[in-house]
Image: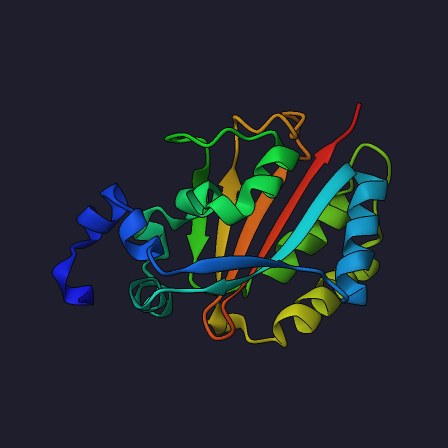
Length: 194
């Protein structure tokens, strides 16, 4: 069945690869997730870290395992799914074409630790961490969430210009991480507060 559709058809009709897929929000029990969230809230103002379990259709699984999610607009269609209505409400995001913009896509997370460390060390409007603390905190997070399986996780760096949750400032960051082996999805977003 997977061979019946082109990438162009799947991009134009994401319901094809979502058919039969499910998403469940997971409650995070990780101390590293809680620590990172508290740090970003203290330094930036606000932070969302949400974890989900994806139960992909065979087509979606094939796209995921072959690093093709960016080509079919997964980063946008993910937020359209019914199971994510609470997240859309929290973000104050009305999904529509181009409401989620892909800034950069990576087929691994080798740079995730560095990105998080840079964000913590540069700080936000309220404070910042030392470079050593920022680096160790970000590496602990990557290890706890993904067990240093750098090549098994897809990294979407996003912008959400229509999401009212963001304050439209320099401290707006939005990442979507998708584990190709466990089908875990992690959403991380930061912004300032007034």
